[in-house]
Structures are given as structure tokens and as C-alpha cells.
Amino acid sequence: MATAKVSQYPPARAIAPKVQAHFAHHLELARGEGHGASLATPPDAEAIEAMIDAAFWASVRREEGYGPKISLAYVSPEAAGRAMTFEHPIALLPDALARLGPAVERPGIHLGVWPIGDELRAWGMTRTIPAFCFVVEVAAPGLLVVKHRRREQSGKFVNVAVLEGDQIKLLDEKAASLPDCPSLLMSLLGFDTAASAAESVNVLAALAVSMRAHRRGGSLLVVPRASETWRDSIVQPMPYAVVPPYGELAALMREPTVSRRELHWQERLRRAVDAIAGLTAVDGATLLTDEYDLLAFGAKITRREGQPRVEQVMLTEPIEGGRAITASTAQIGGTRHLSAAQFVHDQRNAIALVASQDGRFTIFAWSSCDDCVYAHRAETLLL
Image (cartoon, rainbow, N blue to C red; front, side, top):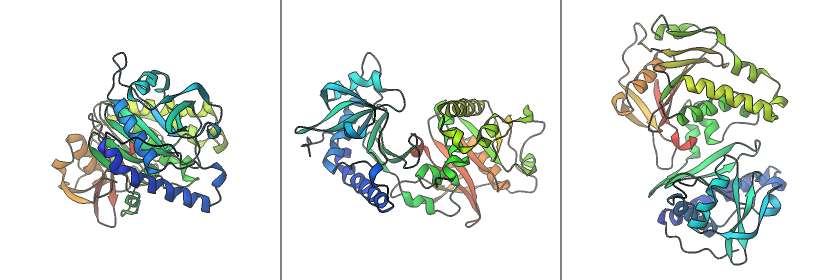
């Protein structure tokens, strides 16, 4: 193993042992299930520390006025498929990585990092990495995300940790055991099955990412297709009702599973998701059935007749050390959050996804176990 330099970014050293233990645990489980041939080689804590340190200092550099967005993957050239390799591997120095930023800023491109001689070096670029490959991605200046690829889908990642400046957030897998944990949250935490991965939870995760990306804020209400009771919580008439419901996304999800592996289908899905996510930027809420038919956008939420005003919710964030706390509705956000909490309280078979302009993202869901609304903060899962 290459010799790692002492980190100049203290959070890198603080988090490296926990991240190393996470990858070692999941790789051991995967090998026990017979997936050994397709799995990554895990880095040791020193390599993790060195890669996080290099990514952080590269993130605060500027190259021709732009902050770099790079992804470092701990993978050998032999395990990286049809990769582009450098004649002279690059040292993990901040300036060198920042200069490479424009070449690798598109999603899905990683700088492959591997021990060469007595140090870690970037040996080239690849789109192919094995399951549970350690990846550290620069999301913004001073903002890093540690993640790995899922076993079943080459394009889908699970976040392990988020580092922002001196703040460390290690994702807590036990959050999936919360009472009535929404399927969307379970998917983002990496607990959906191979079957469910192709179903609604992935679509909602894609919608959540796209909603957060447009930075205008927005609300998406997901309601049961077979019920009309949601109308009791929406001011009538709706200014942008869609008749008949717009079914592009629904039609895509009815196509055979085999079609979903095709790049053409994935591009059509991305366009359909972005179109619906764009509607959430319009003032008011967007309404979508649980089978993905678009019902309306720009809708105004109102308290259902006979229902009390929501005063409190249970607030959670799926990070180590986090716990569910009782919070007043005034603490969770503005009018958009308050109205979403009220809608879920009154329409208990619905969920609400709310994006804030500052990047925060909240999933509202009713808990029949605790008889209250849960507000799950999820932005650390969406980076």
C-alpha cells in the first residue's frame, strides 16, 4: 500500500476510520452473498484520509474562475473497464486536480486513484467502477460527499458521509428503521430491493434531486391514484389543473423492465422528471399520483374542513448522532413547509416533498405508529 501523507484537513483524519469500517462491513456482507467477483478493493483508512484531504483542498481552488467539481474513485486501471489512462499518473495535489476539473465535471466521470510506487496517484478517467468502490466527490467549494455505487445499478449511488468545512455528517443506516419510514427515504439510504429499485422510489428520488437542483424551492404532493379526497385539502378551482392527467412519466414506468436498461429510455425518463420538477418552481404545489400521472401544479393547499391546525412535527435527519425531536412548525421552515405538513396531516396516505431555495430538502410523511407528521430532512442524501 502507498504511503499516505499527513492530512492538513482535520475532518479527513477524523472520519477516515469510520468510513473504512463502513466499506469493509458492506464488502464482507456482499462477499457472503456471492458477489465477490464484481466488488471493489477497499482502501485503508490512510488512503481514505489522503483522498478526502486532496479533494477538499482542490475544492477551494479556482481554475479560470471556476470551482472544480471532481470525483475521485479508488479503483485500479484493471477494474475500471474501458478507461482513459494517463502516460504519466498525476499526483494528488490540489492544483493538479483543479486543473483537471473541466475534463471530469460531467456526471459519471471519475478520476481513478490507485497506489503507484509509494504514493496514491490519479492514473486516468473512467465511467466504470465496481460495486462498493470508494468515491469522494467535490459537490461545491468545501463540500464533499463520500459515496459508493449500488450493487444492482451501475448508475445509482448511496451517500455514506457529507463533509462541509469542519462539519462532518455520517449517514445513519438505522434511520430506515424509524416508524413508518417512507420508501423514498429507504431508497436514498440504500435499502430498496432490486425489484423496488426500478419502481416508484427511484422516480421520486430523481424528482427530489431535480427539484433541489433548480434552486427555486418547490413542493410536490404524491397522492393515491384511486382516491379523490386530496381535493378537500386544495383550494378550488386549481389555476393549473391538468385534464386529462399528463401521463408521460406514468407511461415510461409502465414499459418493460428490460427497456429501462437502455440509454434512450433513461434519457426520456430524465427529461420527464426534469419537466415535472420544473413545474414545482411555480408558486404553489405540484400534484402527482403514486402512479406518476400529473394532476396539477401551482395548487394552493388549505386545511381540510374539521381538521386541527398542525402545531408540531417530529423532525429527523438520517445522520449519526441524530434523533427524532419534536419541533414546532415555525422551526421547520416557511409557508411551503407548514402547508406541506398540514396536507400530510389531513391526507395521511400522501407524502410531500419540499425543496428550499437554500438547498434544504424535507420529506413529510404521516406516522401511524406515533400518530403524527414526520419531517425527514434529506438533503445530505441528495448531494
